Length: 136
Image (cartoon, rainbow, N blue to C red; front, side):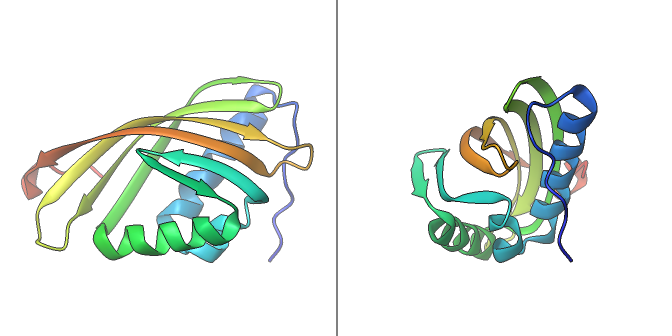
């Protein structure tokens, strides 16, 4: 099913929808579905990784969820202006050894005229948590 893209410039309602759609998509852990929200030549910085293009996004996300199990993400709108949105987020995951983590971070997004994300810059920190300390 094709989802109509919300195009910039964004108002608050549109920015909130973009953030919720991103959260929903990432929680599917379906790299090919997620990659469709990005331009063919999208540019990412994710921690210390630099990713270019949808194919690299798919490869990156596939590898990510082979290492980050039981993944659950929550995003929150931080700011928006014209074709840019900033979010803060947290997610929880279990590594392949069974240890739980919560990751905190910020993302800066830039969109093309069609509403596809052309740039995604993410800064992320992980904190070890106990299973009973999970919130998501």
